[in-house]
Length: 373
Image (cartoon, rainbow, N blue to C red; front, side):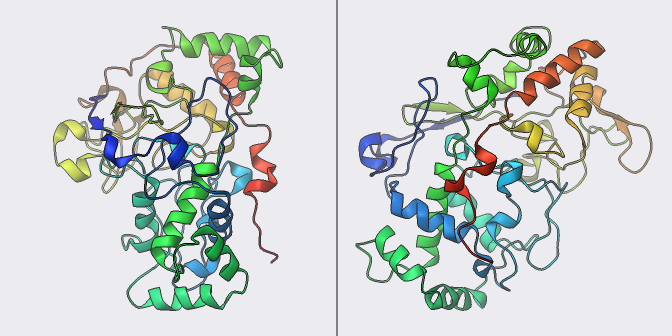
């Protein structure tokens, strides 16, 4: 796969950065451009703080049991360590919970939906979705949820400060705007790799060898993970056109037919086109050592196993209902080929990937749970 879809960023949809950013300032190294911000949801310190409270509040779910943070834990770079995640009613998601760190720079959201191009639109999935139920917001539970928020004394000043021009700001629309602002504030740019770029430390010899493999033409990882965010769908404040490729990486080939297991068949689920079978968005590799298990369905347990799969040019499943040789699927991206890395090369590559772990993000109090339990 790897077929790019061009996403025009119309100037009328975005304010200039200075206007859209409000009073918020990202602290970014010079090789990371500021993210784009919707014109109707400028960043402010007050909105980010409200969003932090809402992100960690279980009262936002229909039955009061689940928060956004239930599937996005700070210590795990805002993932949850599960293959798939339970929603508020106990039903499990079909796909692995992706990190929300650096999501401000994503061109599309979730694993395989070209239509979701903003954090605000993405948030409607966990809030209102029913296949499966995650947060469980329905016409019946919506007023109950809003009543809970209005009854919490902490929220009145927070909503008023975040939306000073709105006399009745406690709405789900404002909730979505605030949580999206908090997510845009979740920045990871303080890994060993970042510090090496800034001249603050030197990578170990193994990390350096892994870096050279990663960005070289032997391992070729950089073709899908070569941006500052280590993915290939990136949008920022100065973007004009954004490529949104999706890739089949040879993870499945059920019965030799090229099929992936329902309902995890990539953008094929939306397009119905065979060439889109198994095509998913390449995730950011930042903090990858904290975000196991891996792949869209959490079916690969370790980072070393992921490297093994890419070294082999795909995965072969010998037995069971999903058996098949993903290395030979007809829909596999041309970027995925057998490269037969040695054991030392694999270890070096893992060492470099581990150097992408942010040294401050997992414990940064600015992103922590504000509620006393």
